[in-house]
Length: 131
Image (tube, rainbow, N blue to C red; front, side, top):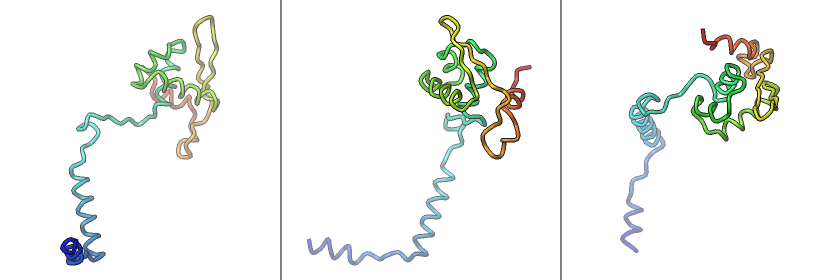
């Protein structure tokens, strides 16, 4: 036990300047070894899953949730949660017609983020509309 404690005591402690340099070097190494989304197989998008679900429902108001999930690339349960969010916030209305749901996107609603709140859901849908 005496040898181990003497080894610990004989270690040189790093100065704050050396510690900062080591951290910076580590961050640079980490950043340079990081792959971009397309290199790692993960693809990021500019729009959220909420926007994607809204777009799909606007294009096809009677689509079943399983098909929405496949088109957006998320689980059916995630689609259910997103639809609930959109309904609660007043962006979407659901009407049951027989055994089928019919979705109506409320296009006059403003987008939520302060940067984009001057635009409406309709503006977003027009931007990504299929020609």
